[in-house]
Image 1 (cartoon, rainbow, N blue to C red):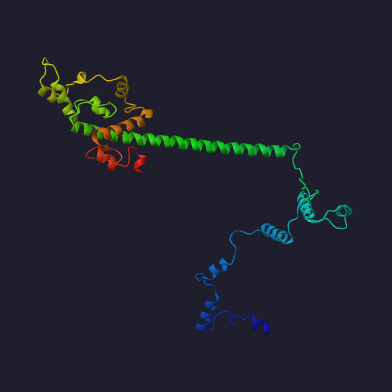
Image 2 (cartoon, rainbow, N blue to C red):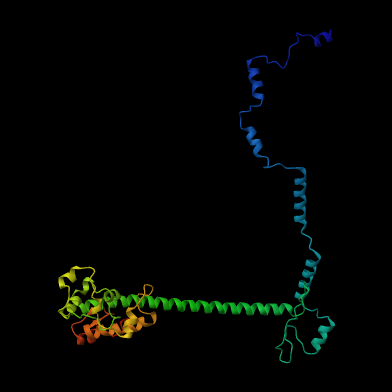
Length: 318
């Protein structure tokens, strides 16, 4: 009878919900794959795959770091040597007692006046096979090389600075000479001076190109001194751009010809003559036109120039 009760198909199944409320409870007990509890559980795990061997290796490393690294034989000897050299000699040592009896005091230097070595000679353990004194010779040669190299660098730097200073000074003198030449040409043209006193006092194009508009007073002056047998009238010469009266230029000296016969690569005077030409031109402007190049002013006469101008050189105007 009991067996029939157990196997009865009409037996009530406890797993089935008895009501709607029990059905909701079963649904809540099941895992909700849309919730964030799965993500939270994944965040607790370390990144990467952890194998048993890597975990074991990490544990061994931690244990060794706690115990301390075992020093090698050479390191252990060096450590003991350093500790031994830092210790003072024991007063009970026989050798130390002999030194004390001879008049030595701890911390006192050796010698009659106690000016000698107060510390023991340091021990240098040789780790290579080079001969005695080789290391010192190498160090001395390296120091000599570094000293010579430093001296060469200083000499090259000084030479470079000197070259650049000279180049800058000459470039500045060139610009000053060009400005002084233009001023001299304007002042000479204002006084109807046909030709420069020196060919280096006027700009080079004004000397080589007599058809320049600024050379009109010069051409007019030369036309008055031409012979009456000329085949061209003055008006034709002024209107013609191809007319060249270069044959009427006065004869120049050898020095002036060297200054005017300049090629395209060197359109000015030689660098060595720039400063001297500039100095002569400044003196000419002062004597002839009462003009001070450094003051950039023209005075009424020579007396006013000497009174108002500090001096003839550039250093006087600093």
